[in-house]
Image (cartoon, rainbow, N blue to C red; front, top):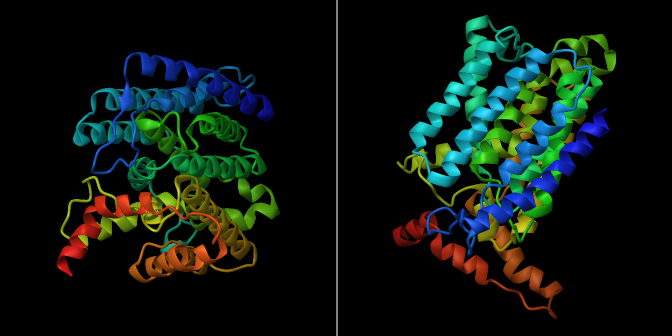
Length: 387
């Protein structure tokens, strides 16, 4: 059943995206480059999320013998709402306030309908099970925050799809081990859809995910995370007890790249007295492009960092370390492995411009893309002017 759902989602996505491409090109429904946030140099269709959702929902329609149709119906309703919001935004550019209001409404609807879920921090910060009201508020925060976090990392070819694929796969495996058939099937359906989408989105991308995909996929991944924090069935298997007792830190390790990037950008912009909601080129993927990495290399690097941090967290969990230690290791790994600070960027620049050419002396090193990005980056321009 799991493989059938995965294969059907993969097939339907790969079949539907060429149709989306054809329609988008015929009606000129494309994403145009600009000088603020978008870094692509040509007009590219941005409705790839339609293919993802078609594959995801179609595969679920053929699931037989589902134990809990209520969960499925709630998730499908929320998925359809955000898909329509995303299509509206991709085609007509909704105001940020209106888009946020729809996200908040969808999160409130889901949290209310699933209010029987009991979230727990497993004793971290002295917090165990949330009261119902606080549980709903916590769920709304997670859903809205991560939906936007995932939307913000959709900035270079293949990145959002690759990170989403890893998170969905991780949550699918955890759900399968815990015997949670509903969410395991949901996760593997999303895995199939994202693999089908990446066939057209890896650099050079033929189509973008757009808000149609990033809002909906981000929301689904946040739902999987909430299920991870609410699930009680880990107690049934002794091998899963460490995972159950450290669910918050393990979940964070799965979601770390979008969460770290968004948190960092918010604090960075506030410290510079800028609005956190303004478009800018200060995300992690922009930092990697600024030091000379190509889209594909930056995507592979960030995906590798996410996987490494997740594996590290699991090793520490099963080695008996506390959640404080695991969370500290996750954050420290981000600080060490992601070149977002000045000194780390200098090291990467030295490697890219001085050390790497020594190993590639017979090959031409192209810095055109890097120099173009540096010139267009408003924060780096402001730093240069101040100096």
